[in-house]
Length: 278
Image (tube, rainbow, N blue to C red):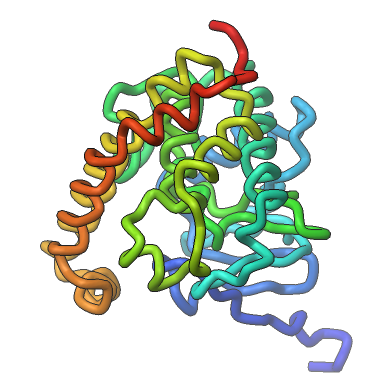
């Protein structure tokens, strides 16, 4: 084999709890395990591009051994513990705007009803929009301090746009009690204010703002059930994370904190709201 025949150098990409050590960058491409819904998901990602959304990877190839190749999105990704630059109001606003762009492009794309979309983090009420469902810091690409790309659509499933906002809020506000938030986020983040910033960035309507705190509580319960299933199935990654982050007592504390702070969250969202009507 000559030097010209050598395969491109590959770099392991880190971030997130799934596919650890199995995601590589090869030049301009990312090589990773393909989700079960890869064919339907690739069709959706290509349609997003045709509808003007240029902030998601473009599918290139599916291999026979169950891997996929997609274009690499250059930029910065925040890994835990999350750095201050990723938690600024400007960054948070840009996350909301990027999610809105995704939803506006996706609204005109019919969801493949025959695909077995994963239900792990899916909206229990369903919907006609293919939601990302996992817009955590590790899945957002930043450029110049603003969210510019979304990666890892493995958990995508049909749902309500508000559900995707609620799931995003859990990670980015974050919607965690102060003790839980301090493990990975910078100190001093004001949750009601940041929830309002995210809602403003996305452009939630008054009705959606009123519904958001309850939807976040619903999303938190779904995420807890997801972790419980992974632990019950013997997933050591999730078991270790659960143990290191305080076990089920942490989840109890988070859910209790959300209920007790529902009123200030609602007040922050609605006070002098510039939200859309409808």
